[in-house]
Image (cartoon, rainbow, N blue to C red; front, side, top):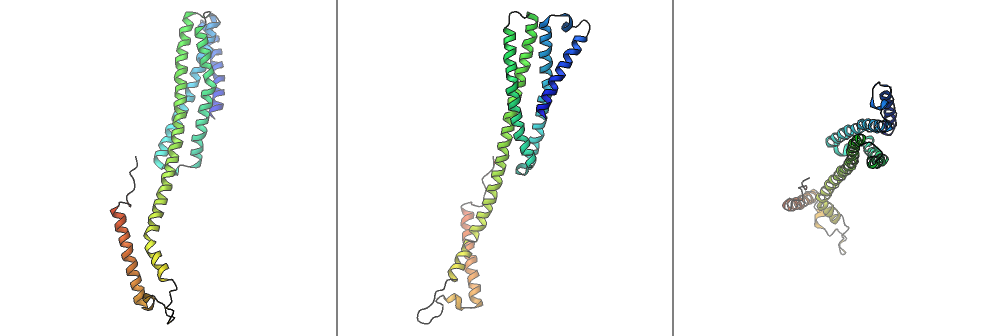
Length: 233
């Protein structure tokens, strides 16, 4: 949309110069071609300002949205950030030659001194505009990296939780596997593990041993502060 806006603003610049030429007693009408050239360039640069303002507003809205929802930013909004950066870089690339043209015109000796001063003002405005576009492109890239950072942090949180749960279940898994082994006395043919012959008492003993070992694991993890997440900067 911004690319088409650029074309629309160019047409608006032409219409603005036409209106100046139709005015009675205007410099563009009664001056030489230098004033006409200045009017065209000035109208073009002035009509580029709303495009820069649109990008600024969109970046502010997306930045606020990113701070509010973090990794839950919609796919459409993420694509909008990527496309915005690409459009800003394209626009900067297309407008930069105009700055070179302005510098050549300012250095041109055949152009009057008064018009040259006006052209220098246009050059200043053009420099400011290009700087803004570059800044907005960098900000778009920073927002994309920030979104990726939120996504990575979310994934780390999930892996951290899964790791804690898995670690807490390690003692139960170990004892389940150990007491589930087919250890058989070669002489009697009976299970060699006494716990398996205790019936419900063996079941209670199993849970007591498992709970005690799990508690020890929890205390060790708490002592080494494994439950504490690193502080986010």
